[in-house]
Image 1 (tube, rainbow, N blue to C red):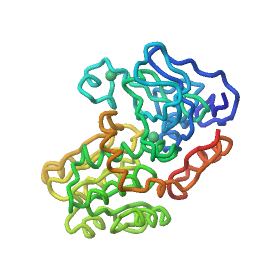
Image 2 (cartoon, helix red, strand yellow):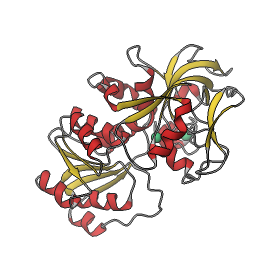
Image 3 (cartoon, protein in one colour):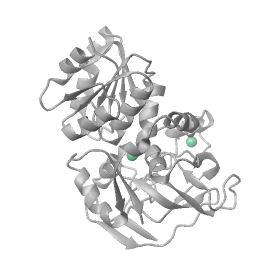
Amino acid sequence: MRAAIYREFAGPILIEDLPDPEPPIDGVVIEVRASGLCRSDVHGWEGHDPDIELPMVPGHELAGVVHRVGADVRNWSVGDRVTVPFCCGRGVCEQCVSGNTQICDNYFQPGFTAWGSFAELVAIPAADLNLIGLPDRLDFPEAAILGCRFVTAYRAVVERGRLAPGEWLAVYGCGGLGLSAVMIGAAAAARVVAVDINEEALALARRLGAEASINAGSDDVSDAVRAVTGGGAHVSIDAIGNAEVALGAVLGLRKLGRHVQAGLLSEGPTPLPMDVVISRELEILGTHGMSVRSYEKVFALIEELDLARLITHRLSLDELPAALEAMRSFSGAGVSVVTEF
Ligand SMILES: [Zn+2]
Ligand SMILES: [Zn+2]
């Protein structure tokens, strides 16, 4: 198979011919038709993820067609159109049994714990648990970007943040995750304020439903959010993963507000104003992907939304290395997806 591979952290990403994967006995090999570029691919490549053993084929937001099936798989056949959540469960541990596959004790993450989807083929274990059949109307690129950022945003905003109609949602960082949160917040009839330092990303956020936007480069962010929202956001999401951003997001909440940390904080422990958490009775919540059980709700939601509006670049595999390199600088707006392998 053709695939992208790196052999050292932050080293060159090469497009090579590699051996085809075999299906695990309980899993499948998927022929990848679309694979989204996510900031966590950049984190992993830069060496910030302890799960990664070199060499690594990155890529974890995928959709495609079942290509080969392991002997123990009951529910899937060659030719089925499928996607998977970026964090797959094995189906055995306490978390999986309670339906929380996204925090499986022995999780499988393509592109992190095993070779991923910037490749013609990718192997996925526990297929009967993890595969999700695609509705006919959903194209592969849109299905692919559900896999990490959109479902993470859904769990953050709806399931963890419990955003209610009429409430204010403050979205910090308008990359793929943040823009997904903007769309989900607007679809939930909430009022959305988008925060970023990139005017192009803020303009896209406004087109996707943000009522207000704040340039974090020029304003004191917490004060600006509290002014725009009349006292503070009800729910905030750090969609970047930065200690200063997380702190500002917590300070920008109103009393009884909920902060959801979705962006990865790769720098280690993050100081938070616990005095403010107490005095305003705030909630600090983490989120890590989304359970496979919630996909039906997401499919129902995206009936109303045009996910293709998030996708600004469709790339070939050969264009991937330069595109990942460019993501390191946080420039541009919207989501890129590899659609040619
Ligand atoms: Zn598990
Ligand atoms: Zn991701």
